[in-house]
Structure formats: C-alpha cells, structure tokens
Length: 249
Image (tube, rainbow, N blue to C red; front, side):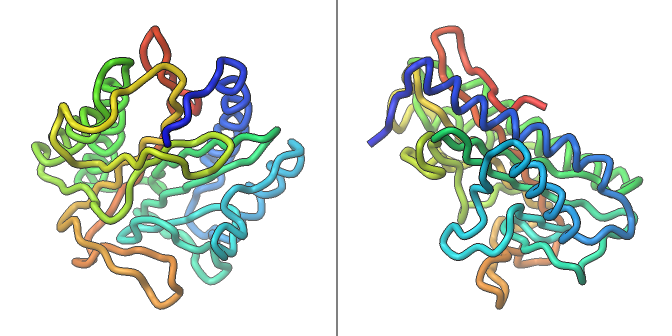
C-alpha cells in the first residue's frame, strides 16, 4: 500500500532529509586522495548522533555501517573500510539514510576524487541530470513509470545503461515503503501519483552493461564488466505545486 503523508509528516521527513543533506555537504571537502572510507563513515555517524538522530542503514538487515561508500565499479552498498583509501581520479558514491523524530530521509551523491578525466565527468553529469529528468515527472496525476521512463530514456540516449537490479522506493515512517521505483519502464504505467507521496528516486547509471554481481561480503554490488558506475538520489515529495526536493543540496 502506498502511504500518502500529511503536510506535517512531509515536514518531519524534511527534517530528517536536512540532516542527510548537511552530512553529504560536510563530506564533500573530506573526499580527497588518501582518506579511507571508514573515516568518512565515522564523521557521518558523529554528525547524526550530534543531531539526536540515528543512522538508518546501520543494522538494517545486518548492514554493518552508517554510509554506503561505493567506489568506481561498485554500484551500491560498498562497505566502508580502513583498508580502502581513495585515489586521485576515483569516483565515490555516498548513500546515506537518517532516522529522526519518527521519519526517514535518504539521499546519495557521487563525488569525484580530485580531478577526473572528461569521460568520467560526463558519466557523473548524465547520471545527475537523469535524476532531475525523473523528478520532473514526479507530479500529481502522472504515473509512476513516467519517472522510470524519463530516467531510462535520457541515460540510454546518452550511451549508458541503468541498473535494473536495484530500484528507488517510497519513504516515510519506514526506510523502504511502497512503491518500488525502477529506473526503467514504459511511461503511462504504474500507480497514479498523488499529493503526499514521498519517494526516494535513485538512478544508478553504468558506463557499460547494466548487469551487476554481488561480492563475497554479501553487500557490495559491482558492475559485471568492471566499468564505472554512478549513483544519485533525492527524497522527493509530491505536492499540488509539483515535486518538492526534500534533500536538495
């Protein structure tokens, strides 16, 4: 069942999202050559607890960390580690969820480490732009798969592929609610979008094939061909005035 939220509930989701946004902005200046991903995780967790909130991912289905830190060919769910240090030219996706005052916020951003080549810059740009193409369709009266179709069309026309094994989701009192939001599909299909829906829209865009595989840790998803992957996510509320981005950086 898709849960429509009241204006007060949307505000409380927004409060959680503001903490997510604060952390993603704070981590930006830390993402430099030589830092290990465990240190990024530690800082994120410290900020969350200082805001009297809780990490949404830590302990979720056994996940061991506060952030997901996915580097280069890692698509999602990369586990932070003291052994994994960032290198010049890497890209890293930070996916973060926060639970505060009864509601969840969720967002992801893919950062370049130092200067990256033009090919990588283009992947990041197209990936982020595809998210906004999807958000543009998150309007009252549209269909859910209008979002999916807009993302897929833009990504594939740009020469990339969208991951099909992982999807966006509804969000609110639970981290993952109905509906699931694929990043591919035919427009005009799916549930009608209504005021009060809160959606975490998150395209994962691969440089090569859309296919992924899971590493032995049981969490980290990587591209099957070893090529780069990029991930962007916003939590969005559907209002009578159009989509409202609750995690806007």
